[in-house]
Length: 92
Length: 220
Figure 1: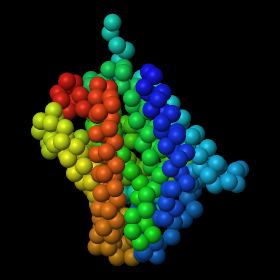
Figure 2: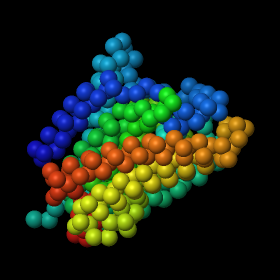
Figure 3: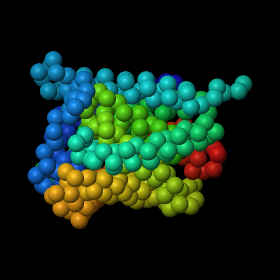
């Protein structure tokens, strides 16, 4: 279990280090839509943290880092429960 | 490559939901016979990694960026069935909490990234032949990562091209080549990152990777 904890810490550190260098340019699909003059509408459901930012925090780095950390633990938890649900207990 | 709501016609949304749900049921059933309980922490950490990696966009050309999709990465780590489920969790959390990818287009996003990504395992296996030769294995992973991103982009190009919003702008004749052009470049980034990550993990933790175990015929 210790190595998974290490991996998790490494993921969080990498996120904190690499976030400032992440590109804000449109991705492949957004670029295609942009080139064809198609605008993305404001979606019906905007989620709690649209574009990986917390609406209440002004500093973009802190905001993205907190949203990202929340997302990492959310995915971690849901995927772990799924992993339990989809496997049988080990026979000993 | 996350398709937002409003890009796809309702018919295509429904069709892609139906196809993706069929694959999810299949991978759930297969997973029950494939994995032991030790899958759970590996599934959790690798899903969390893919979520984090998808936040980091790398620039490619002409003011366009891309990010790791991670489908082939997950399929080599977890095997095809858990990889499909893992990526679906990531996409679901992105759609629900971060408005990254739409709710109605969720089925399409699951197909383009989770299903194609998970099934890319079989291409790795086909290309590798003898997985004990790690050079050949990493080359297969490199090629497969590129192919999985390009195939996902092809599927995405077809989905948007046949939807009314894009058909007025030229339809599939425009959307497919445009999607392929950008995603060959993004796919090369994906391939380099995936091959590097897997080779490092293979060096550090060769025993925990269920996907590699399946590749070597120890499971199933």
